[in-house]
Image (cartoon, rainbow, N blue to C red; front, side, top):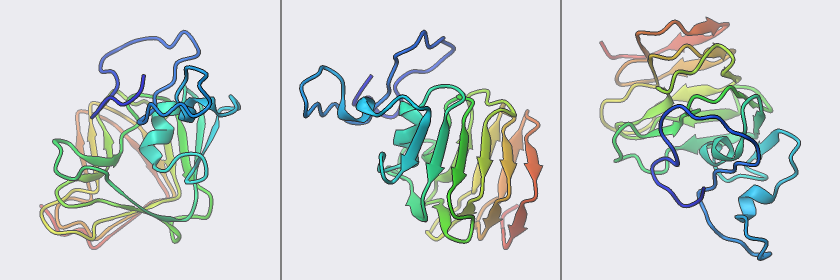
Length: 186
């Protein structure tokens, strides 16, 4: 699946193996697969070394894969889109973590968008770890939105939202060793 926006597939399905999701259909080696799908199948995806964005790595990942995010500030690609976010695991059971901790790896909830969006039935096996999730734009933003999903969020700093630091609807996320600072919504 390549070049589908805003998402490649919605609903329940089973990956029978060999499925790749890619933002770009570029195929520089002419093998019939997008370049982003030609990575070694070790189950570990690196941002920004292999993938420009966290969301691109999520699309390429299979269930139970690991996504390691290097230091930097990551923002959403399309802040004007409905339910825009920096990343949404899309129901996959992934370990998405920073390589150097929350002080150096920032998820910036852009204007009227979420930093993290969980709305596809994520379970505690979806683990997010070691990020600062903050808001530096204008407008009313929430840093984390959780709807009918129960991910695990560990060792994160959730800060500076003009909306809500974390909104939870019909779910039971596991929040462990996180700090909530300067969230001013209601």
